[in-house]
Length: 322
Image (cartoon, rainbow, N blue to C red; front, top):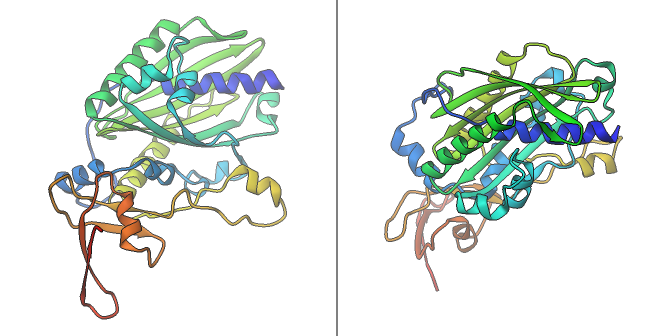
């Protein structure tokens, strides 16, 4: 059983390692979003946003309703990301120098491993979002990981774990660049199958992947999850989704007979924060009655003065630093 769990971890490394490029920049949200509006939102994105962008279980589909939240879900720093790439020589310093800032992964798993034992069914489904310093850093990272993956096809990527075959498929219109991947690996006599779709949206890299114990064709299913992930990312960036809570496996295990009270990853966020020396119309999504002196701390650059409209009196209120 333990060797099966190790195999799952290694195949997730494969998924993260094959984020290469093709495709366009369509908008699946069904609304008109100006390039300037999205660009401003992307400039002000902060690490806590990543925890809200990944897809909750109810957004994945009924087939995955009985899976358990994986205990390894959460923020993925550069050390953890380096440990998860397919290149054993990657280090946290390498990823930091390459411009990776942080990431967040949320996965749901068949903890009983019954699918692996039966040789059919879902083993795990997951989404993740990674934040980079800029567009160039994100694209360079994707190209490097794609090249690394090609080098390891047909080789042993873990103890007795062989990456036997990989094929890619086109995903048109998703993000700024996107690609689909199918991979087969073997662990002794067991076969493991991965289908993933990864995409870049400006300096964010998102991914959706589905692990199965059989070779069922699920390209379109994983594409749909990736499209839903892109839509959610945009909704978070534009302030349409605030602090959507993500349940943690520890809480569910502690109270198996009751519905856990989810804990949001952050009290809220500021959208469209001003650049240094400039002003902007910013908005807060999160806890009600958050004092401005605390809310402004969520902006990436210092905010020296702020004005707001009191919702009850409709009068202007002002705040000055110090």
